[in-house]
Amino acid sequence: MEIILWLSLFIVVYTFVGYGILLYVIIRIKRMVKGKPREMQVNTALLPTCTLVVAAYNEEHFMPEKIINTLQLKYPEGKLKFLFITDGSDDRTPDIISAYPQIELMHTPERSGKIMAIHRAMKNVNTDITVFTDANTFLNEDAIINICRHYADQTVGAVAGEKRVQVDKNADASAAGEGFYWKYESALKKWDSELYSVVGAAGELFSVRTALYKPVFDDTILDDFMISMLIAKQGYRIVYEPAAYATETSSANVSEELKRKVRIAAGGIQSILRLKEFLNPFNFPLLSFQYISHRVLRWTVTPFLLILSFILNIALAAQGIVFYQLLLVAQILFYVMAILGWILEKRELRVKVLFIPYYFCIMNYAVLAGIIRYFKKTQSAAWERAARKQ
Image 1 (cartoon, one colour):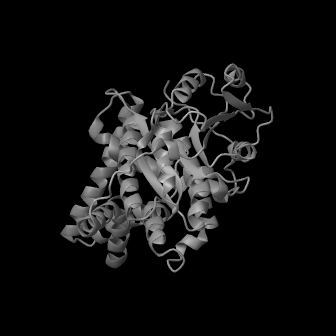
Image 2: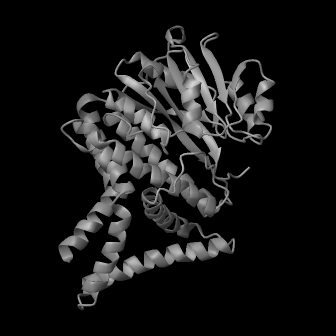
Image 3: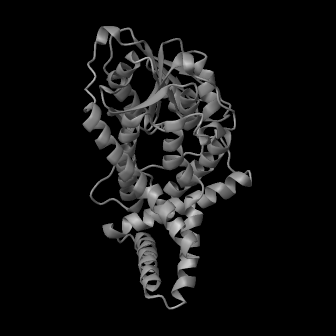
């Protein structure tokens, strides 16, 4: 029992903290040997042609501001196109877009899911690079330049931008937890990219060499992750560019954030089953290490190991071993803080010290729920947009 307990705790700690520490140490050593990577210079005359693709479903509240933001993006004249696809939208979203002749609009009343809309849009893309971004996110004006400059390196097949969650001082647990989570994720992605490659991209802002794009299955849940990983499968790197960022508001509340996390978890287990090649380190030695450490452990075993380690800790503490009794107290205290965070959140009483344990537990519950939903075949690939703060 002791061996299994310590192995379980080690994997849990490694997944959420240890990998980040190990990655940081490796990067520091690499910089000592090879020096810090130099800032890439931008020659705007050599930037590739690019199409910005926005898939939108019933986004009339965000669309006017999204269009203004899009048309303010800096890029060499004549090299940037805009393509918005609004399949299935039955609000004013298509009408708002159609008022702007600079933007190509694709629309059909049938709703068949985001990935089908993306596949349809890609048939109209004829530029070197395709940049994908969400309708409810807003980009910094140099985002496209900062992304596309990386394609001067022929080993780069995709570039991921940074996701930033707008959090105010009165943020609830969903906003504060999501904001903290993405700051930590951004740090990991910077180090992953510097070591070798980012492990997948988030749909808020990422890009691909158009010639390398491969359609994914129509029932794909995490289309952004799968599209980028299929490019990595071809032997190209995915680079992370924090100077290109997409800002969005947090989920409207914890229930909406949980809905989003469960969908991601279901998509995570689907992706792992479809990307078996990356589980073999002989195929992709360095990328497999990054993939398993950063993604696979989170999306598979860690929630179960949290439960197992708690049960084993109870059994060992019952034997009267003081150390395990103290460890059990620490575990109980952590979960009590999470429960208090949940209770106070319902009463709209916000204690920030409780946000992290509460959000941590929500995340791991979502993984369990997502795995169950996937194997019960109740997770649709069609758009299930979580409500966001306005």
